[in-house]
Image (cartoon, rainbow, N blue to C red; front, side, top):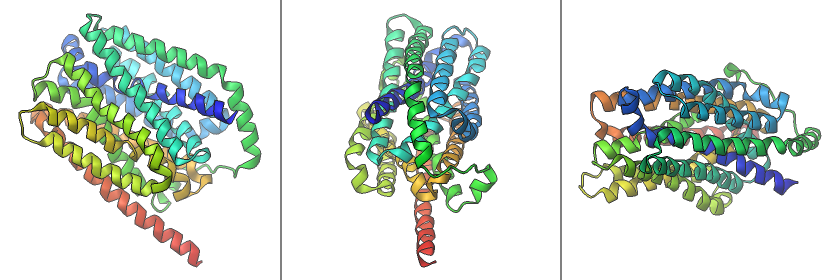
Length: 395
């Protein structure tokens, strides 16, 4: 049962990644057809992220009441319906409307699954599971590129991914008895989880720092993925169809990086993995920044940024029970997710305004500033947790 449940969670992580890179890869075509500005993509991502913030903050109560399995299945179904809504939309306001269930579905499942894996599986499994998120995120731009180059249009790109999500949701609903049996077994053996309010959680030493780190990471990841195609088209002169394919290199870097991280995560530990990841991402951003005419450096830079991002998210999540206690992990992970989605809500649209009113060439500079924020906050978190542990040992 342990192995079968793990396989089901792998499938759920694929479903998490599938929708995440669709908007960025299709937007260079979509905004012209819809008659809106380039920066309007930020409005959609703000609505999606707003929904994820709400559902992340509610995830603790939802998961304890209904269980991680049902929360996951319902959430995947919600995103599938929302993506189908995108596929039949022919106006910008319709996309904004369907972005609401999209965001609500994404936040709850993200927090529930991540806490479940952090509590019950080794660090290597967290990396490999998030690698499968990358599989979904890397596959969907190719689906969109195929539809754009084949004359099917972006509507069919969304429709295909929606159908895949519906199949995955059906699979998750069928697996619900397995989740219930596992939940009943664990309820007898585990320490009861605490319900923390936002104010209580923020007062826990180190929590504001991990929230800031997560804010910076998700802001960087979302900005990099959303604006990569537009950056390549407008600054590098690459065709829209080709840019949609090349933008997936970033997600391929994340996917391959997490696969590799799984082999070393247990040995290096979460702190080192985070530090190595941030420094690698900075190196990739510098490659994108190089003022050379050869596009190979920028494309390689996207891959390296993805490789750097690979260990950061899963390592922060996996370290949460160790940093703040298993009984606090579900509540704190939900709050971390909310903080992360604040980053995805405001920072990509902010860059959209910068691109529209200043210059899209500031894309790598913007990413570098977010990476520097992450590095500063994560190192301060390490020192804070070390001091707390030393104080507890002395007591």
